[in-house]
Length: 230
Image 1 (cartoon, rainbow, N blue to C red):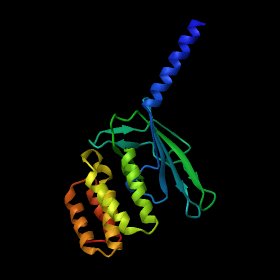
Image 2 (tube, rainbow, N blue to C red; image 1 turned 90 degrees about the vertical axis):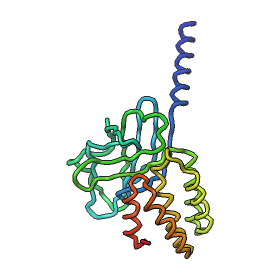
Image 3 (tube, rainbow, N blue to C red; image 1 turned 120 degrees about the vertical axis):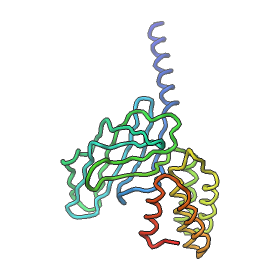
Image 4 (spheres, one colour; image 1 turned 60 degrees about the vertical axis):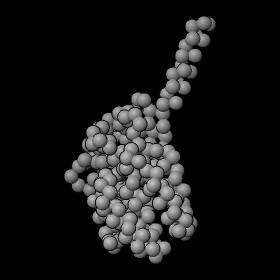
């Protein structure tokens, strides 16, 4: 009986330790991504592994999708972590063929445990054709919440209020969270333009150009592709 009790207590303590040292991010905010209908639905970080749950929606007749075996997590310091396993997605050149327009494919990617105190990552498919990428995936719960709240205001057609919130967020971001900073700049620029505050849009466009944040040139290119240039 004493042995059983000891084992039960040990199991309970181990379970508690795993829960305490695990984190889940539902629909984390992303600076930029390559595929419009490809989304990160959840990231689970445990002491044993990192699980990234994704989904992609088909919007064309005869659509198909696959994932290369060379998928990387890229850390802010440039170091890389390689994919160890995948589930629910064929490895290229094999592919999943969608049956209907609007069909959604859900799949999982497994990586080694994430480095401690990592606030953001890039997720990049290292291949030669139509490769996917997510730049500036935010792994800061408080920052994700603030961005979500500001985004809801924009969706409710309250651009002036949303703009104020994004400017406040910009003032609180430190170097540890610079991966998501480009998204904040983009929202401020677009909302300034939407509220007819062109001087402010131009001001933040210049700030973005001079900021030196990660993937800076891609954010500028994204704005330019939408006709926004100052």
